[in-house]
Image 1 (tube, rainbow, N blue to C red):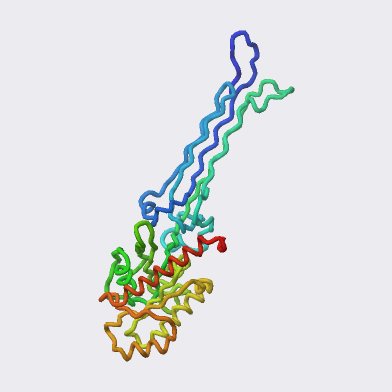
Image 2: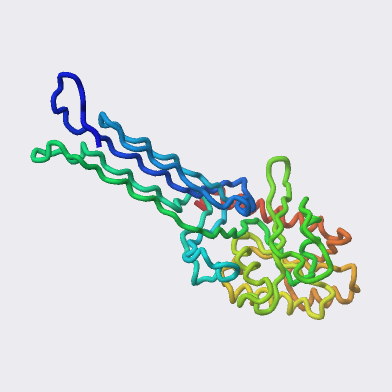
Length: 327
């Protein structure tokens, strides 16, 4: 609230300016980010408040926005009751979907509007308003960020089939490798270069078991990430009793979760061929009756041929995306 006070100007009238708007808190996609690990340690973000209005009809300065960079594929939920802990906090009944970020940005908390100065309330019947309005409080909320991994190729298989070993051989990734189920608790990402300035990403997904679409094992962790891959690389175990049943199980669990995923390009590789006979490999080939790549990730057998097929597939997909007919 302000009045013009100037020598030789009696009753200068109200000249209180409006307050500035508070800044917004904005999530913005950064294509160079791959994880949300930074926000494990820094969890509180606040935008700048707007400045107060001033005399001489000067508008208060708007507060600066706070930009939070996130990787593509980030899903944002509002936490209804932040006081809950553990699994209760992440219960679907305690979460409200806000949005999903593949590109661009999303405003998650809006700054409050600035108050109105007394100059706004001057009229023919109110010459000297001696009041102004308060600014509105900005939004305050707790959110949960979840990353659905985006990769060009996703390695799909049962636990202990050799997914992490294959990832380490095809790319420069160094995932944890051990001879027990569920070594991979979250997706590992690797980069396969093609020439100097190109390449594709390949992800080792957590192992899937029967009932994964209902949440058994690490099923849902696996399935929600596989949605974001372009190509499914099914990895089967040559030493199992029936690689054909393995493949049927994997496809069935994916179908139960989201049938659309099976419309993606698929490549099938049979691993651990160094541990079986030639007769067993012939039997597998006749039973599956699909194009197969027989490999031993541990001993680097057949990997050059598999890698070449992946590169050709990736280049073909990129060409389709850039062609006029696909626009």
